[in-house]
Image 1: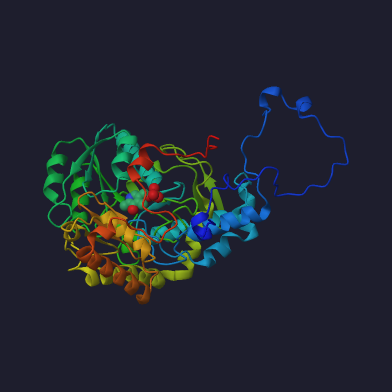
Image 2 (image 1 turned 180 degrees about the vertical axis):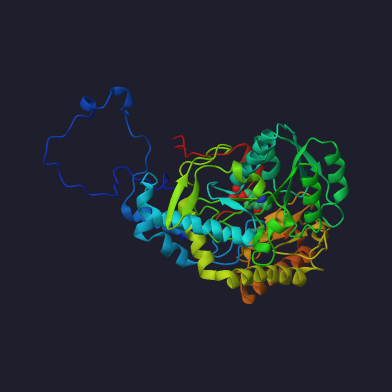
Length: 493
Ligand SMILES: *Cc1c(COP(=O)(O)O)cnc(C)c1O
């Protein structure tokens, strides 16, 4: 019987497509004597044989990887509603700018005199982020959000040490992103979890109780929080913390909910990381490095990582002379390419454009919320900002869980939302459409979610087998995590 499955179903690993003696290159015949590697390279560094590389032709390679690339899903293809991750469209103009020769060919060891333009760019980005956040200064060094958190918490630790204090406790709400407690522990603190109230937000009382103990270094709060809900007491919390000599670390990964509308500086934040790869549209999610600049209040300025970019007249310098600095947190000055893309985005949007971005993100999240409430359960009913968290409790009555809904969405052609986070919502489906989406795309997603809710009523069993249309069907996720097979091995003859 011939194999009538489609190419897509027959796709092999490139190792399995190997055919002895097949090559992907043509070299001219040697017209000089062949060198003896053993004569020039120490024996210990020589490989006996290059084992098991696939033997394939150029067209084999091109077709294999082109076919695989078509299995991919990206923001360039459709809605990517991964909550908290802000998978917005990355405008092509950013890529044009970062590929300009004068930028792409820079070397981090070039003398300051020859990179004045690059320093001007960094300085300008710092000014833009100061304007957005209302904070005193910004370091551009951290390479991601979590790295920004660590940078901020190390500054807070240093500031306390400078006062001769060794406070140990960091308060973190139970709605927090997992990186927050991890960061606090990594920076040498102990985490005390604060329970959210009925609205999923922070009350003053539990924080006050802990502050009275005198050992609190900081509160780490995500604003808006991971439910997509604004923390209404944040300014009062900041006041209480400051009164007791503690700091407010604000997780600003969700800054796309209020750029151009509100400023963390005015809410009393002392340190705040910004995910350029979320709010300011630089690629992420398998798409390259990130950048997590940290904005600080006046109280933390002396502790900023070195070097800082300083301007005097028309000249820019890298300044290392900050005696209280926490030091360097990154080789060189951070992921420069991300800084360029973010500034290109900020400059092309302008102040009014950034505000419109925020309004679009909030409008889209609320449109989805209104369209699906009553169909999927909303545990917290406070108004949404940039994202909305549903749960699977209605569908669970029929034995259908968030994983089934997420997997079924793949059959409808959408990337699933974030699942099972935040932890305070059991069976969470956290949807963040971003402002990139037009109403047609939102409606198509809403229709798909409604169709799945109907399937959950009428044919719940079917959903347990989803997805049905993808090249790879549902995996045993526990086995994939516990017994991963990460290398191809030649099958035994
Ligand atoms: C994404 C995110 C982070 C971590 O950012 P990374 O760049 O992935 O390290 C931290 N907090 C929140 C709320 C986030 O959404």
